[in-house]
Length: 357
Ligand code: NAD
Image 1 (cartoon, rainbow, N blue to C red):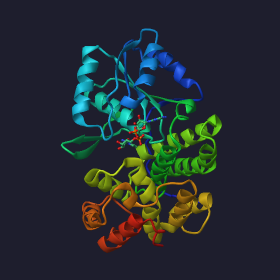
Image 2 (cartoon, rainbow, N blue to C red):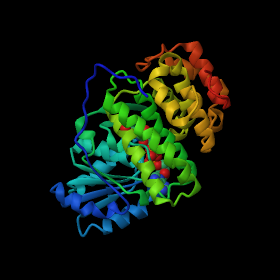
Image 3 (cartoon, helix red, strand yellow):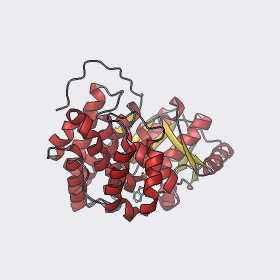
């Protein structure tokens, strides 16, 4: 159980969510509901065929398709998408894909204020936040604005069955990381804590079933439900050490997003469990064990997650610089972010050893 929180502020976004197998076939209704008639459908290159099929199913309400979404939302791709949206006179956006496609939709909406319908196909959770990370000249910056928040989300578990098992696992741990850090966020509230606990529980219950049978629509649905909850808490509260480490590793060393989250999570949570074991107790309740970091390490191992930063391409010689960057301008964190302890954490995560308790 999480301890009772006696003082808090809470704010949540007005987002319309439809959930269920086959719900992607209801996009046209949602376009109508927004009062729109010309949707621009967005995707990554590998999901272009699905985007084309979706556009073809919209009974003339697709103004065009733009299939160049890329990881970390490069601003030059966004500029091209904005020009395309203008040239086809689009009045809304339909983003079909993972965090990269959602990011492109948000980046276009930020610049044009076009309403967005998002159909997520991974567990990243970006669709539930007003946060946009974008990259220019290799530098990633983050902006938060109400225009970025998608208006409508359609969660269709049938679209996630094609996500390969390895990506399923890392994407799930990426989502769970939002919920884990929400438990000790400085601006948490009882509802964000409740969402975080339920999101983590959904992944604990359903992820092993998805790994056993990736076509299990019921289990895919439950993991997607977990992704919605974890994304929603990410939109409500601030993140801490874990996200700072992942942003450093992704931004400065180009490590892959979801995999990096998967490796770092048990170590960052073990680091903070030294300061706020009581707030992290729900993780022990859900995953078993007596230390939240160890509990997550055991779970990650069980579901076959990557366990070592060295396997993601980080050189041992980069660990000092990673530690220096991670302790500069730290995010608010429940345990002081000390350089030596962070350097040790990184060494252990690099080697793939169990977290320091
Ligand atoms: P992604 O969107 O880059 O997808 C990875 C690859 O998987 C792509 O090639 C994609 O086409 C493919 N793919 C996606 N769904 C698939 C499916 N169902 N079947 C087969 N292939 C599929 O990866 P991601 O992890 O979802 O998103 C990562 C990005 O999202 C990062 O840029 C990250 O910064 C961002 N993000 C942002 C927020 C936020 O709130 N701003 C939150 C989480 C993630």
